[in-house]
Length: 252
Image (cartoon, one colour):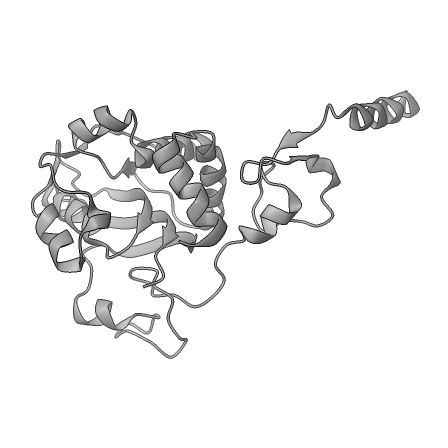
């Protein structure tokens, strides 16, 4: 029986029945033929793209994820960048997968503007890699969009990432608790000062989060203005702890 199964397995390989399309480069590959254990448990990338999309392994600010040198330390002894030492963010900690450039940037932009929602399965694997050893939160939330923006695009990429990740990890998830109540200009067109002004009091929490730990999920963190204002809304709802989690950190 085992010999027959072996022959059938070889036949499947020859016929290409075990091949998948790499989510990033779209080339066909067989996950069973990968020659090494990847740093991320995923069957969605070919071997070459697994290397190109390896998680960031350097030293980074514990408050915002910005790459820093090992001797850049905050008052608590953790690595911390100068901007966060001067103006600490309102959340407790930050976690992210990689630097927003090259292959990772390409994937994020394809999800955000091209509607390639299958990429959310890959990003769920990335976030699992980042968060697998963290204490589980009471609640997982996405950064919300203003309703008109969601209608225009047809979806909210943070919602899609967070929902897929929460389902994969069986986390409590609700996309309707944190809402955006104020429209604004696209953040990518604004400098750091105008980003904060653009988002002032833009978010509202629909119910009390008294004593709860919250994971707040987005695709990219640049200046942190969006996560900062969203965290203020969660703090106003009495959230006990907020961790911001995102796929890419802008290298700035």
